[in-house]
Image 1 (cartoon, rainbow, N blue to C red):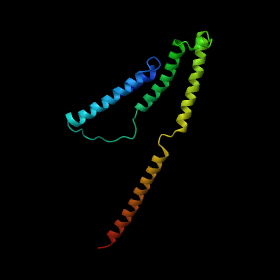
Image 2 (image 1 turned 90 degrees about the vertical axis):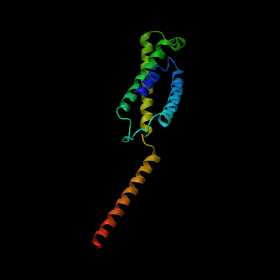
Image 3 (image 1 turned 180 degrees about the horizontal axis):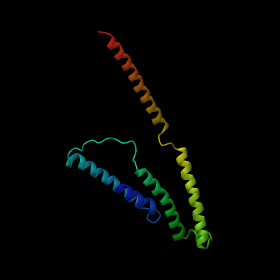
Image 4 (image 1 turned 180 degrees about the vertical axis):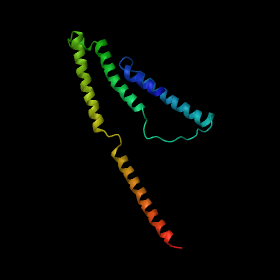
Length: 153
């Protein structure tokens, strides 16, 4: 919860406070080390829980935050900076139109990157297929041994 909230603040308002990402990174490093110290030296051993394959519902939340952050940062940049004044763009409607076009172009870039980059790298996919093949081969060998043992007294 805490990290998702931190991610939201950084993503939504990075234009307003660019150093926030660096401060959050330093905070996370310190928190990581302090948590490791607490787990190793102060508290009892934590019981193992079942492993999961993904982050569950948080994936959708973080994705939505990234889209909202894109729009938020463009709107903040468009209405608070003097970028449009320097290129002689006057009128809030024209500014908003340029912001919407920029947002759509960046969304297209985001979708393109998401499409081109798989969730699981090729090397990992290949290793997983190899491990599955070896497990199936081992099961076939074990099945063959058990039939031979059952027929012999």
